[in-house]
Image (cartoon, rainbow, N blue to C red):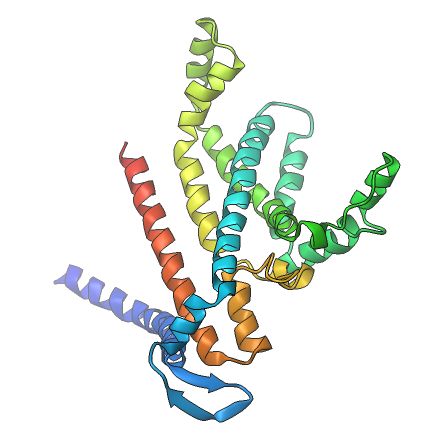
Length: 290
């Protein structure tokens, strides 16, 4: 009886927060789902017309949707490649004993705490600007023509900005996993004549497999909704060259005032994000079982 009473009290204490969380999530989702089935334009707020799946049809057949979907996948893939590879090598470097190790680790992790809007502005105006940016100055120093990064390679530029923000996160997770590696394994392998490449591919990398999977899962969930960096730097352009699904939904809702079409796009984006998340969660589950 005491156990049942304790459980009842615990559930009663948790109920308000659970209900608030459900309302916080369910109400906007229900409203978005409703608006996705109606014709609703912000310029004509009084006119609501039920049109069924027409918004979904228009959104999925829009040429911009295909471009935005490919850009989203390229952005996520590019950032994951940079952060996983770069994070692995940074973690290995930071795991070596050297003077000022603690300060270097703090400085390495610092970019993760910078707001996306601020970091995008810094990269746009101080690094990638074609006239007075740092990259332009370096190009002129070596006698090269400065590159207008955000106009010539917009998606790659956004990928660099986002990767710079997420690289510290990957480094921190991988460094934590690396510190749990048994040094005796490495010493035994070195005594058997194993060189640095063999140690990395046969001991270090297998040990980091689970941590890398966790990094990929967490980053993918957040990278599917990258928005601030695109808004501040390229506004999705030139054309649709740097438009992802999140920015496309924003453009339809607040630039074209089409709430119905944007709601349908939001539901499509949520479905795609859940498919990716379920796939990655199952991948992690298999990884943890082995």
